[in-house]
Each structure stands twice: as C-alpha cells, then as structure tokens.
Length: 250
Ligand SMILES: Nc1ncnc2c1ncn2[C@@H]1O[C@H](COP(=O)(O)OP(=O)(O)OP(=O)(O)O)[C@@H](O)[C@H]1O
Ligand SMILES: [Mg+2]
Image 1 (cartoon, protein in one colour):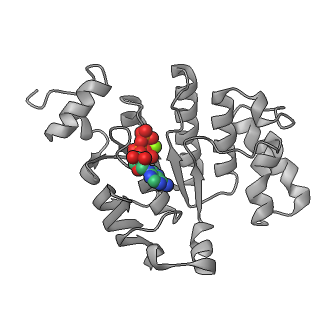
Image 2 (cartoon, rainbow, N blue to C red):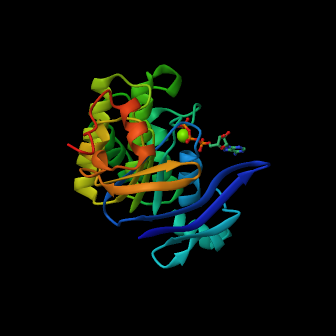
C-alpha cells in the first residue's frame, strides 16, 4: 500500500502541494483528476521518489520512501514503473532498444530472452514490426504505446501513468485505456493514473481522487465519484464531461 501523509512541496515561492493525504489501494487502479497545473505530475514524482517533499511522509509497504536515499531508494524504485506525460523515450534508440532498456538495465531477463520479451510486449501494444523505428518516426499515439510497453515490460508491482491518452484521438485513447485495463487484469499491479479523460476514466478506474489547491479534496470508488456533492467536484465535472455527471439530487 502507498500512503501519503501531509505532503507539502513548494518551488521557490510557489506552493504546489499543501498537505496531501492519500492512500492508494494495492492492486487497484486509482485515477487522479484535477485542473491543469495543480500539481498532479509533481504528486506522481513524489510517489516514485523522483521528488522529495518539503514536509510530510510517503510510505510504500511500511517503508518511508521519502527518507530513503541512494541504494535503498533504488531498491524500492525497482518496484515502480512510470509512464511520463511526455512519453520520455530515448530519441537515439530504436523502439526495440527503448522497450528493452529497463530489462537490460535491471538485468531482469538473460540477453537471449530479451528479443522474445520485447517483441511480445510490442505485439500487445499493437506495434508489431515497429521495433527498428526511432521515436522521431512515430506518431504521438505510437510514442505513448512505446512508453506503455517500456513501463509494462519489467512486470512492475506499481505503475504510474501520467496522462497516457492526452493528445490522442478518441479511438486511440480507448485503445490505450483498454490496454491498461487488460494489462492490469493480467499483471495485477497497483496503478496510479493522472488523466483528463472524463468520463472514460470512470469506467476503467477502481478509485478516483481529485487534487485541487494542493490537496486531495475528494476520493471515492469510481462509480460513486460522479455523484459526489463537493462543489469543486461538481464544477470540475460539469466543465470536463459535457453533461455526464449525475445531478446530486437526482
Ligand atoms: N521541477 C520544477 N521546478 C519548478 N516548478 C515546477 C517543477 N515541476 C513543476 N513545477 C510547477 O508546479 C506546478 C504544478 O505542475 P504539474 O506539472 O504537477 O501540474 P499538473 O497538475 O500535472 O498539470 P497538467 O494537467 O497541465 O499536466 C506548475 O506550476 C509547475 O510550473
Ligand atoms: Mg501533469
């Protein structure tokens, strides 16, 4: 289980996280929504240990991640994969080598097994035969899928997805969602996703949490979230979902 307690983070004078309290249920898919620039990506970077809080604690299965450094931090981070908002592929490497990278870096499988594992993963994300291409030769949706393949290939216990579908057409967004859901079913990882894809995220997530003004202002099972009466939730959903949210008094 991942737990954040009173996590605060500022950049210079700008306060971004003002005491985030959040518990991420193990083996489930939790989606964080909220207005742009509120700190969702910053929050994910704290969960994976890429950023340290100014105050507060981040616990992963009884270990306080926010206090770890060096080797101990790396040990915990081996359990995580993150799909960055920008896909963050290595431009000088082929698609194949990008996906193979974590396998080789962490020596997860013997080198002779790498082609089979990588090609299998490329097939799962619909990129069969694309291994020789370079990121610059790919569309936005293809890059996202390479990022997804690279995150999934290590069989991580915890995966963080930062806006996996932003900038994709609705069909490609649905493909990515279905892929995340299917992989989640197969591998049972704990997933934290940041997404603006409302209403789609309500049907693929187990839990939905909303970040606003540097705090988690609401969290609920995904089927209950659209009915929450919190005014900030109502306002956000009415803008985002084009009428999908259920009126509270319905
Ligand atoms: N490394 C950094 N140094 C300084 N400021 C940062 C850094 N990372 C993020 N910020 C600032 O923190 C704020 C929150 O950024 P963040 O990327 O987490 O927003 P977000 O909620 O993910 O937005 P979006 O939905 O647009 O992706 C922004 O004002 C951003 O400029
Ligand atoms: Mg972001």
